[in-house]
Length: 316
Length: 146
Image 1 (cartoon, rainbow over the protein chains, first blue to last red):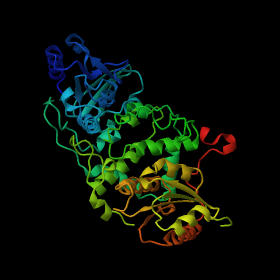
Image 2: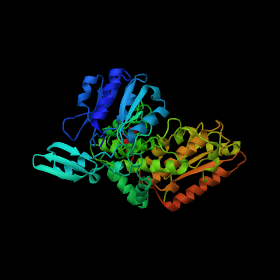
Image 3: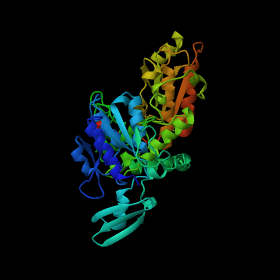
Image 4: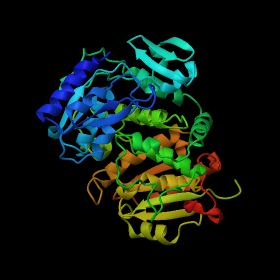
């Protein structure tokens, strides 16, 4: 597990020396299950900083909320680091104004799974690499960490931050890149009708709260297509066409930009599965263009560029 | 199928080089084909295709220029990247892949578009009317504004 004291010491140093103006990290939330993102402006505030497996948000989301020229420090895990890189590729921030504190990640714990096991009255949560100990009013429960991990984290291939300025803790072994492909192929082996039935079942629960959009680091359009009124691109109400259209276009807009951090799914109040859509697009980008999101800060996503090789690439 | 399949036809305004073909498309399209002319295939937003699909089209046809013959140099290549992937994606959630067809036309092509549209119509008749993803609210109940 990451050494919390080492993170705090480094954050204090950054703020005291004026290397950065603000550090984005987590602080304790209302319950032990929900640490919340926080902005630390002075070394004194840093005492309340936390970093554990229950930190659900992708902190890179807040980069586009801050002024471009502000010096920002950020505690990043593997997926967050790649999201930050993808934002730098899209010129939303320059690398010079960023200081990344990398923390190798052992996977994000899905709080819903804890609640399923032990109920909601959680008093404290302790964790190590194999086990999560949950204290409730009824007593103490030991749960296996692997069973509690979020679906995206189970198939994560990049657990270490790849371009952090400083790495806190020992690098972990990288995950198996084939796991993501297997998940997509499993879904694709179903028939058209079965896949449509699944999509319909997931999309019809949507309440159009757009929590997935707010949680996603790559969803930073000033005006989203669903908010656009003239011309209207899609139905904005919770109608079947509106709900399906939102899920299709939200996912498609992430093509070659999604890092599969799973923040959208974790943010969804209706527990709608979404990564089966974005994973398919990621998988295609890997297959067709050998492109993986956020591995460097130069390569443009496939839809933002064309090559002469394209004329031989298509079947028609 | 008693009725002819409804086809949404997106056409790049430069892809039909011969005036005879363009005139045919402009004036003599059968009533079951709905023409939308765009300045380039690069202008075709995947949302256009989605709107056609959700609005009840049985098939979507997109015609554009061959690679390296785009009026805007690379518009067609960018469009091919996006739209072919969008078609794959619609297929991923259960829409038949055969219902979206691309026609990439050469400068020398004559009379191809008529043949392709007729062929597409035949293939769609075999497939039958589209069922999946047709969810648009009826115009009387608000349509797109619902």
